[in-house]
Image 1 (spheres, protein in one colour):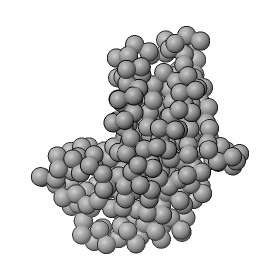
Image 2 (cartoon, helix red, strand yellow):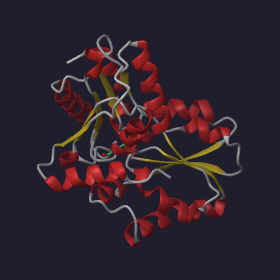
Image 3 (cartoon, helix red, strand yellow):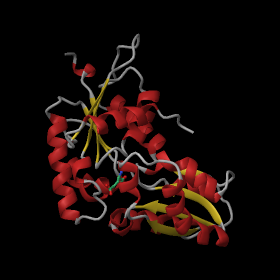
Length: 262
Ligand code: DGL
């Protein structure tokens, strides 16, 4: 296989990273992709940092066996726990891209009210996020909003309806009353429930996720490492693997990959 034909590896604690993969498939349509979701051990956000680091390094070993040419950690939680170690180990050989809450575009909207960052407890507690927050909280009011339990619902394929909306109402209505400038989705599972979030915070409130920025970064890195797939005449392939030994989770993953991006 030509070295540029090798797939780009995507990892998430479960099916959330599919929200980043679908953006990559759209922008880099002739590239080949391989995705691994660790749904068996999700959620990662309630585990210890050491444990998430270990699980992430193991998952990456799986992707390396698929002969990947680039690595995308499509999980905010795993990025905050393991990206330094991963870069130290692998960036000599391939691009290693992580994801973080897209605070910058939210600040640039310059709207009145709080910027609400929905994420897992771990992402919000880690140094990486706190450094990001220090950078932007001088001129904006940033409100971190941990959402334990939400990943579990999405992992079951529950992305709309009463259960999700009831959960979101409890979290978001008190903040809406104080004024929300923008909502940042700091977990790759949450773009799948964007429609329900929008219903609660209002259509005019921007809801931002990091997938576009992450895919742009991937694109730049493919150029930098000189590994862009030159095969422009055809669409690339997508192969999805999951630690849960079930066809249902694979089917759900492909269904989410085809969900319309709003
Ligand atoms: N998709 C992961 C993220 O972006 C979810 C983490 C979890 O499994 O708790 O943070």
